[in-house]
Each structure stands twice: as structure tokens, then as C-alpha cells.
Image (tube, rainbow, N blue to C red; front, top):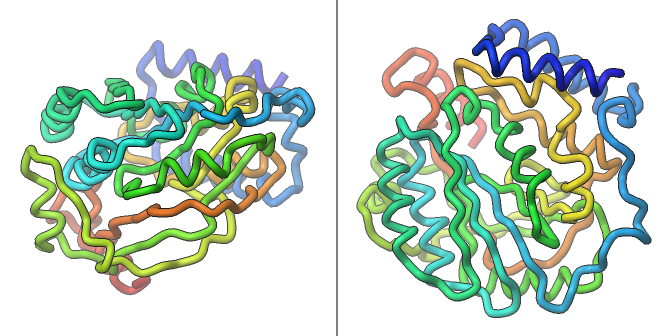
Length: 309
């Protein structure tokens, strides 16, 4: 009943271009964060999970779909997409799916440039969305999860770089696995970079760009969070990505805070299983492309990120 109501409401909002106000996000968002703590049965908001024995074990040469969103972050997405060109896999086949909006001229040009490169074992998949759907990251993730043909799906962000050896080391870890959710045990990150940093400025040109891993330090992860969620394809095709939670499938007039990864862990009943993956790197940055530069909101968010650093 809840699933049917949520799906009808989302279709109604999309058809009528009704975008909820910020207070709507705030109230429902708090409800789902409380629900994800375990006080509400996840089965109310998803289809039954495929039993573990019924999930196809990861094959010797797995297929992988990597899914990211980009809104005015093309200078960082350039590093991610370049890493697939510079360090293509030999032990798996990957589809690279990027959701974007046509109004984002920088990203549109970057995708055209990268798409002109023919790379072994890599398939490009650019998916344009109305910006109101792009602003809710769960919409694209859910659409891709339900439609994927891959053995595994990696939900990521456009500031993650899949450097040398990353995808092949991942392929080795995926063989024979049937868990619903995995994540890399470690990643390498930069310090919080200012927008004037040479690395970020270099990414603004239409060219292949690479990172110097000596500028990154190693950090451990304790759960499948945000950009580090690797989902079994059989699970993704059945429950999507928060498919039954209407809030996370509703378009918005502004970029929404990304809390849906916590809800997804609740839905699958797991924080994820850690695996050893080489070359996972994140470019950390102060300025958020989703906020209009120079506004009070942008300045406050930048100061908060500096304080967190």
C-alpha cells in the first residue's frame, strides 16, 4: 500500500511539474533518517530482496555499471572520466553512466569530448535529465539500478577517480560474491582544495587529465556511504535505489542534500561488506558547484567545509 501510494505521488508530481518546498524535504527527510535507524521495517518501502542463493555469483569476468551525477562539476568529472581512458580495465567490462542536465554547458562539452574516445572494455552512457530530476540524486540512481544489465552497480560521485589498477583489482574481488552491498575498505583523498587550486583549474580545459597520487593520503572507510556503494545487480534490478521512498524520487527546484545512501543501507539491511580495491581516489573541494557562487549560502557552506577539514 505504501509502495503504491509513493509511486503514484511521484508520477503525479513529475507530470504536473510540482516541486516540493524545502520544509517538505526537511520534515520527510527527518522521518526517513529516523526510520533508517531501525524503528520502521524496511519491507514497508521495498520489494522483497532476492534470497542470497538465488543471486548470480560474480563471474570470472564481471560486468560493472558506474553511475555518477554532474551539475556544474565538470572540472572534477574530467578527472574521473579521464581515468577510464588512461587506465582502462582488462578483467571486467564497464558501462560509465553519467546523469547531467543540458543547461550545464561545461558538462555537456566534456561528455562530447570524452565520448569521442574509443576505449577497450568501456562503454559510455550519457543520460540527460531535466535539472529538477538531476537535483535529486536518488532519481537517476534508481532509474539506472532498475534498468541495469550489469553484474554489479557502483553508485559514485563525479569527484571520485578510478586510478591505475582500480577496476582490475575490483574485478578480482567480485568473483563469486553474492552480497547485496560492498564498499572499498580504503580510499585516497586530497586535502580540501580551494577553487583556485591548479588541479581544479586544469580540469576546466577540454583535455585528458591525470592526478599525482603523491598528493593523496590514505583513509579507511567503515560503511558503504555516498560515492562508495557497490550493489549486486540482481538486488538493484528488484528494489532499485530507494524506489519505494517517494521523497527520494521526487524532482526538486534546488539541489537536495544527499541522505538517500543511509536509507538504502537500511533497505538492504547491511552497512556493506568491505573489500580491497586499489586506486580509489577522491578530490575534495571547498566550493560546491551546486550552489550559486558568491551568495550567502555558498559562503556559509564553504566556511562549514573548511571548519570540518
